[in-house]
Length: 485
Image (tube, rainbow, N blue to C red):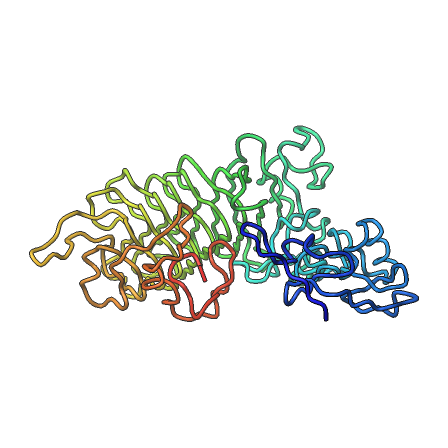
């Protein structure tokens, strides 16, 4: 084998995958050694005689498809096999023929999305990937869409058919005219769509938001409702002016939306079940209030900048699950406010969350407040730092103030400088402050490797983090809402 390497001049790469021009005529880049080698020429009369890594027959020799012009490569790949539509031009499958170049090439309903880099069709992983309906049958959603009667025959990972979704688009609706939830005649308001069906996709408005919605369904088993937006982190998200769910037969999923109100943004009462997935709840009086919720589920959501409590669980609420969620800058100017308040009564899971800068300064309990009788409340695998507390140290140098009030129990929690870290019955409480970026992601620092990374308890029910990244990634689970490595 003739091997030709780059000259290694400073500032010039000797990696032929990075710099293909290093390989002279008559040689090619070996993807394993990343060095130029003599062409391994395989003669051919047709593409049937070629291998997958050099799938096309050109000038009587087998070649990788990326050695041809884009149009010819794509055309020759499709001629090779009708299910192949494109030449893969990057990544580990570079030079091979791929099955797709765009979503329309993916005809398998259970694999509707084209991974362009890999040239392969795959299941949808976000609602926004389903461009026609705006709704994906996601696996692991806080409230499974399969609970909706209209979707029980739709497979996981597939895009919900457009005909089963009611579209709300205030910028394109005919105010005072025909509205039926179709692309041509979308509803102007979410409340109008909910009066006609159980699955609503909401488009962002160019300015402002939609009105508040109040949802109550019967107890006949047909009480599930889903409201799906275009995404959590968009510059222009779909904004609702408040959501109230009530009634024993009511089950509501809010996903990829923003909710903000002049009063309480989200209310769950009288036995309803409410699930928030990738929802932003912000700039309201109270973020999420659950005085008497049957079950409240919050995952991958941001509760921030609410004037009073971020999240309040009342004594008549039965169950909760809050994971992979961030609560920040809630109640900073209101006496007695906090990021989270637990009354005695509800039971559930509060884990893998990050709480920072909640509650007013110079006042204890700015992070989490637990009723004195709420002994079952366990805060685990989370980061609770720099929330409101009284300043000062005792005679032994321990802090006097605490971000917690009541009978909260901590397990594998980072609290930083806080009086609670010196008190039982707390397990694995770290005093150090984690290093976070502006989005509350863990930074790969020695401090974080010491106190946060791989320090969580394995939990098969938690498979992603706040940002949608895989959990775990390294030797174990990282504390807080972000899985770094």
